[in-house]
Length: 390
Image (cartoon, rainbow, N blue to C red; front, top):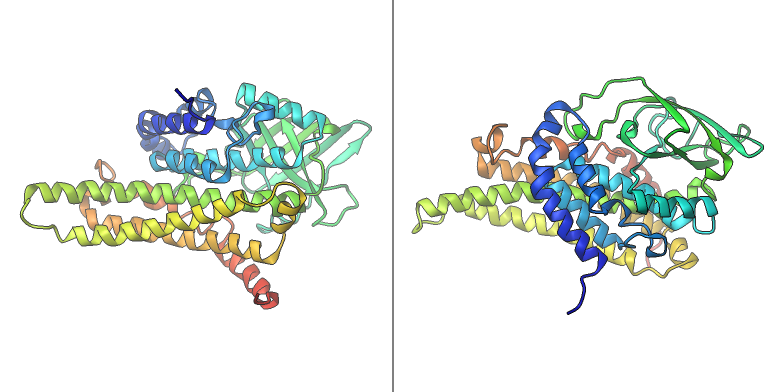
């Protein structure tokens, strides 16, 4: 009898967590704008947080396609929980793909797999106006120690994380775009909250502004430049995993619409409900959304390992594909949830209904704002001007 793969076991666990934990607490997480602690704890116990860590360091070594599926499953029950998982995977992927050869970071990956540490990030900064590829703060290194202070406009679930990856200038004399990442662990830093968190959706991500003050061993600075880890890892993982989780949220809304339509059909078995046609149409849109993120995830997974594959990710063609996936997915998700709402009607509009899609709607509206679609479109326009046809 063959044993299931690590991913298959994680998928079974994710489905159980979504049904038994995330769905149970999603409404309260949303209402209170609180961290989804129960779901995150369940994911830790199921070892979901080390899915992206290579097997050599104790993780499951899951592919992009597999990670996207895990995020989609969790987000279908609770969008905030799915977003926390996706953001964690993005940061953990930086360690997995850029830190082999660094004794400190290799050991940290082993520790993450053993203890299921939750990683957060701080890439925003007061004064950079949303440009993550520019920093004002700089890491200061004296001997074998670093010091880093930063004023962040947002810091998703940073108050609940075990470590934070922080962008900054490589040194005090470096240009704003000459950036590195620093891994700061609990005990290395203090966080002072500088703004409130009462958003429309994704309320459980707990993303107020923070003042970070940190110091620690200089070996915690991530090797290489942030420009490389951003282009080769952060951008691909962000846009694909976010597209997957938005699909998961939209899919749950369509599932609720399907429950409603089948209920109508049972009442009049000889007559096809008019909403059935609408359900068929929105199901087609949902399938297209799935195909978009899964096909790009598969192509990413099929890239050659090593320098050649990572170099390909820095090309204009791949950058455009990631940009276009993000924009199309972030625009498709609200439309699909809206279609589901039109099918269900008042029962989908009421927050206290088992068929409510209010939380889904508010959560997916954040999609176009997470790295503004307008900013992405402007960058894509510049790239299209220099792109040559094959």
